[in-house]
Length: 113
Image (cartoon, rainbow, N blue to C red; front, side):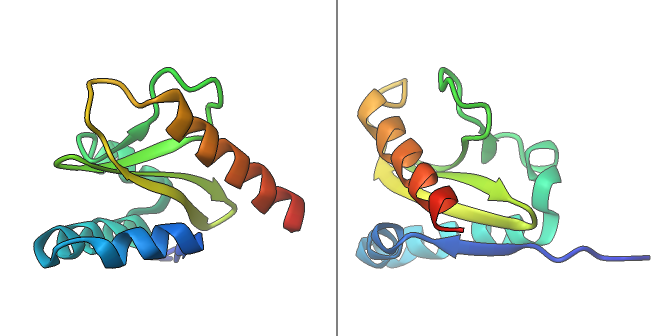
């Protein structure tokens, strides 16, 4: 059986966000990143509460990792998940400013390849 491998790349602000977390939250998010590497595109089917398309985003490519009050927005380029923006979610819906940050970084990434 062929196992496809998936990669994860983080924008520098996401790395900084991860480093700012308390140990338990950092460990849980890193566990979710490892699951993302393992399951790739099927992650939303395997773990729908933690990984899903961002509701309300006009861009269908934008996905979200969620754990507790933490959110990471990302998208796929071939077999690579690009983690764009990490933040604490304080309301029921993701703020337009957070979506805008992620979309701008997505555009920057796509323009650089």
